[in-house]
Amino acid sequence: MIEQISARQDEALQAIGNAGDATALEGLRVQWLGRKSPLTQILRGIGELPPEQRGPMGQAANLAKAAIEAALEARTVAVSSARYSQLADTEWIDVTAPGQKPAEGHLHPITTIQYEIEDLFRGMGFSIWRGPQVEDEFHNFTALNIPADHPARDMHDTFWLKDGNLLRTHTSAVQIRAMERLTPPFRGIAPGRVFRHEATDASHENTFYQVEGLMVDRHISVADLIGVMKQLLSGIFKRDVTVRLRPGFFPFVEPGFELDIRCLICGGEGCSVCKQVGWVELLPCGLVHPNVLRLGGIDPDEWQGFAFGLGFDRLVMMRYGIHDIRYFQAGDLRFLEQF
Image (cartoon, rainbow, N blue to C red; front, side, top):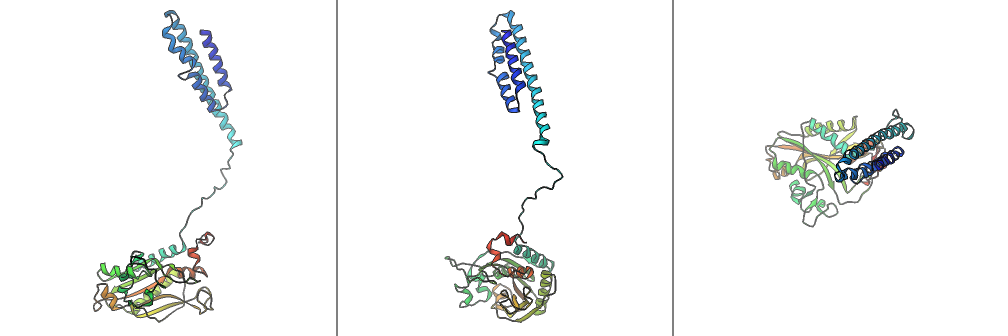
């Protein structure tokens, strides 16, 4: 039986010497040292041998086991060293070469300009107000002094929902909510997404983004409005722009104005964005109508205010020379990756 142990040892050592990788060595370890291996079976059966045979048999089996373990360890080191020595040829890497930059997302150009405008107004002491995109008729129309028979309430201008609510057509509704919960004086802007049920063209979309601002205080005048608007435009365009202020009618302001900017796409010569007139309607504004203050819970005899609205989409078009507002919602990565 001692000769059998020696033969088993020689067989195991030969197999280990021929093993070429770690997987093969692990299989040999289980085969020759595992619970069902010949050496383990011999060691378990030593107790059944005559007393005079137990010592020599146990010593021979343990020596064989130790030799196999040493051979496995030595071969594992040799196989590992050989593998790493081959990496310079099989898996060569130029560590001085620049790596591949992973693709990263970025902000939409409308989001970028929204953040810029929010920062501009924060610098002037304005708060940032948020509100729901699904509005009720009171906050979107009635509280803004928009009559029940006003065309803006018709289906061709507004997305009405089956429950009687609507998708907000402007963020002025957020201003009403601010007046209901704040005590004058206060100032803030309401940026966000709005919806209009209208046909699209190069300068009109049915889903777009705007910011509307409101300031309520004592002795507010048109001069305060013009001062804030000039500060806004100079901060956005980082250059002098030509503007004009002309009378405009809006139910929620009195007096009302249209602030137009000379088209930065064509320089005032006429294009599809400015509809060939050289000017782009940019910013409706005015002093808050007393009825709106009253419906917001503010005494118009004591407090006055100004309000304005500004489209983010058109600002981005003016800044980057974009000719069609529909690009923003098209989801074309070739367009968006330019920003």
